[in-house]
Image 1 (cartoon, rainbow, N blue to C red):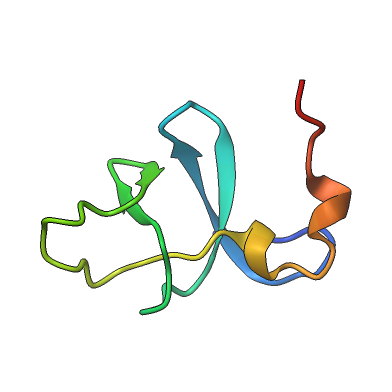
Image 2 (cartoon, rainbow, N blue to C red):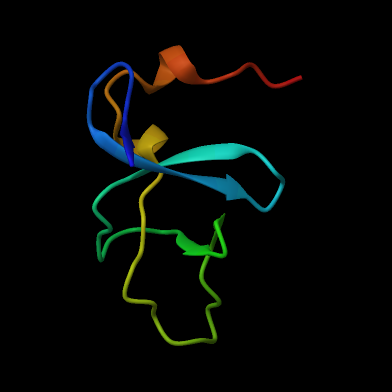
Length: 73
């Protein structure tokens, strides 16, 4: 676990299915939209059971998220 450099909130890091590092809010929340499976953050299978541990992207909750977003190429 680590903390956000700008708002100091606790975060965990995962890798997206595209291989990008992604900060997630810690602790998990029932309102989260991602699960971590083998270190990879992904959307849960809609046909499967709702996982107990769901995470929210820290970009959605950080008040300083725009400072950390990379420009799309």
